[in-house]
Length: 421
Image 1 (cartoon, one colour):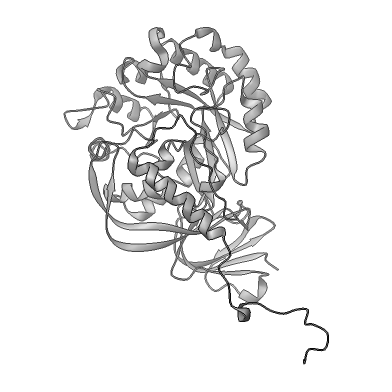
Image 2 (cartoon, rainbow, N blue to C red; image 1 turned 45 degrees about the vertical axis):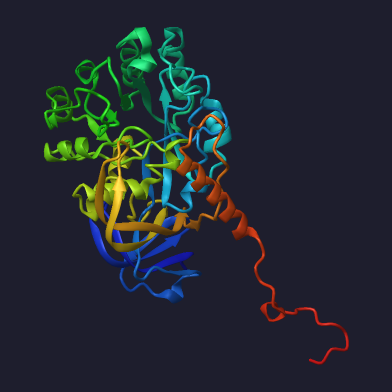
């Protein structure tokens, strides 16, 4: 007998090339079978997905989930259950000094799957920026030793290389990050922003399989030039560097993305979700996927860029529905129409549909609803964002209040003695 049968949805699974109506059977936390017409009577529980889109659990390549210990940290559980993201990659929140804590208090306790990129700085992201300004904290030997202790958790290296973070140290933090990545034989993710260092400085140090995140940002002056991919970015792309969206709260511009797409770049799609960007304009991974549709992608390509492709980049057992895979499943309602979506600079495009997650399963078990905490006091919200957060809290409070008041709304399992049967 199967434990669960997700029945009758449109299943898009780029890992196997499947796109069509099918049922998904789950046994012991793993995918047992995917095909149309599986018998409902063979399952202990049947979930009706007719008229819905069913995908592998989404894989977010760039997030920040070291909540309670870092500037950017966000609890993944209150977001995961309503968005379909089952694998969260924390991108450098913890360095050597904080990786034990990230495992103990986040990865081991979360309902979702959490992996991590170790920050080349032992400080990690305890502050807004500046972690690469003191080179003594960028100890490659120490970071390599910690990464080895957490080999099942650490799947790569992270370095933020922009003028605010590196200060007078220029390209040296990147050189140390490259040395660390090569030592532990895992990919390096490099955050780019306002230079210097510039893309021309950064790109020559990256190798095939490394990741350039914030690839659609309007901040680097030499990422896109004259409406085309710059020569430095083109060389990195042609050498096999992976371009990653990493939307965040300040790193996504439609015109940059469109220039890259026209140049043949096919990025992986991630949110850079953190304590700020969860309030917009990133919000969550389905929202960012819809922005890719607004830029001209099809639904299959967008799902692929947030499932099997990021999983392959980091060697994760995630992002697919082949038999034997972890039974991480996302179910969405799809509404067609014309929906405005925005970038971080006020640019607006229209998406042909929007996605609303209706169920999220990790290892075949549905994630329960979970309320998010208010933002920490250092997160700046616009008046509109503040109003939306206050409204969210009020709606959460109202949803938790009892609303049934009629006697006939309730059973009477224990009638009073002498009452007629």
